[in-house]
Image 1 (cartoon, rainbow, N blue to C red):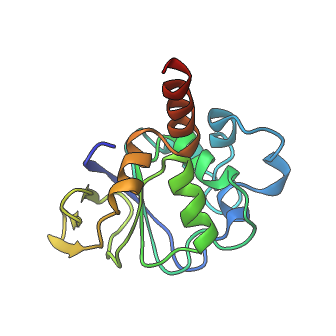
Image 2: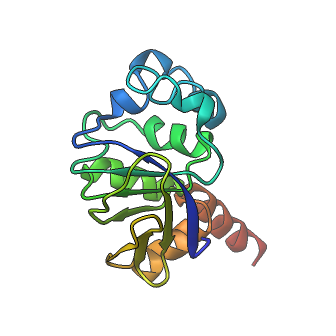
Length: 167
């Protein structure tokens, strides 16, 4: 995993649920780029058209609550979101994000839409470059860092199985 991300902030509040991230009627595919076209369509209709590769979501408490759909972090990856910074996460969303390789960090960062946010995963820091607010977060354990570096659980598992077959 890239140890650092820098991008434009998209700010959301508390209790952003998976149906807000990707509404149920678009769950007919697992294709990240197709899901991305409908990310936040009902709450921020401009998101899918304006989000840029590397942008960062900054949110409040309980991000990703609701159903356990893996589609939600997939839609964010497909949209080009490099990282999510939130005060806290619904546990299933957090686990799904890690499993598919979307970096998620817990920090209560104050930001406005469009602020430049930097996240250094290796150092466990997040910075709002406009306000100079710098926060720390608990770094991932080594295994989770490796999973993220591989792009998530499935690419990691495929690599591991491939290694075993070649021995």
